[in-house]
Image 1 (tube, rainbow, N blue to C red):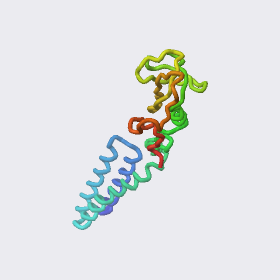
Image 2: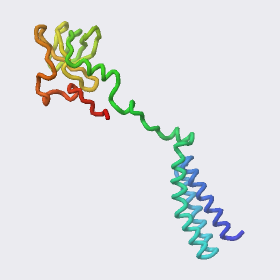
Image 3: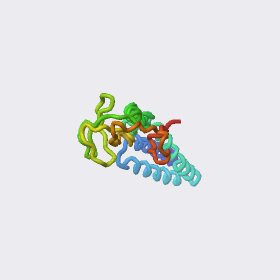
Length: 190
């Protein structure tokens, strides 16, 4: 067999092993054999003649990256690729917005009763629902009236209030001193 034909066969084997390395990780063994086949193809090409050698070497140097890029493009659509690669997350998985967060934000300004002693964490009852909460930093006795002043993530912050104390409306205080969540602004809405 002529050197040019052997160089073409080794070049084809080099491309095939590069594709196999993408789809079947071998710890670099198939990649090494692919590069070795490419070098062998170039040597046989130059033994056939300088133009054939340059052609085989150029085809290998340009074709190998192209073959790898095409293989990597189709990898996610294969069965093994779907097992190796994670899918893109949905907006429900990424955005911190859900029914629980909406419910907790709706509690801001509402009043309830401390169900347990809050040192500073405990439970409060608001509208016949028991909710885990934390106080502003002071101890709140069981049975004392409380008002939800802030929601931080999934943490409800309450303060003790006197029964005859009027409800504070959100517009009465300085908006710069209020928490971001109590302003009713959704930072992730479009």
